[in-house]
Amino acid sequence: MSPAGRPRAFVIEGVLEAAMRLFWEQGYEATSMAQLREATGLSSASLYGAFGSKQGLFERAVEHYMAGPGSVTDVIGDEALSPREAVARMLHRSIDMQTDTSHPRGCLVALSGTVRAPGDDEAAVRRTMAARRATDRARIRECVVRGVATGELAEETDVDGFTSMIHGFLLGVSTQVCDGAPARDLHAAADAALAAWHAPSARTAGT
Image (cartoon, rainbow, N blue to C red; front, top):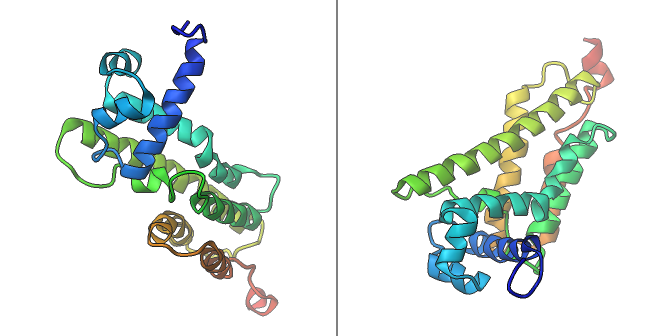
């Protein structure tokens, strides 16, 4: 129990929310323990006691993000949807989330842990975020493969190239959002990218 009589889990959720927002806005390297103490209302001893290190807190904050705002991309794995519809929903929902002004803009996974700052912690964070992005890429690839198998995409589709186009667009949204691109333009861009997702024409299929 916490000093206020609340379960520790309640306190942890609040701490993770505060830490997530700070890491999301500033990135891992730029976020100091002093800022984390101020944002969470906990002492360094309490933070280290609960999470082991700044890196440990960051990893838990990323898990919190993926269970919350970041979960918008989970629709890519919904096999009840057509492959194209799953990709479309992932892109448009991600744009809606990243442009939502109720929290930091952009995507925590795309924006954090990409700068090659020195230090073992920073290297570990880069590996963590790279692994998260690789998971997203793998799920997109599975969707593209399913698109070929169901006839939504031509058999000769370059699966890895198509996957890179979609994943690259998804990651690039964060940069556009942080530079002030309006949501309507990003949604239009997503629709333009999705225009490449179409079944082979009858003429092509018959040749």
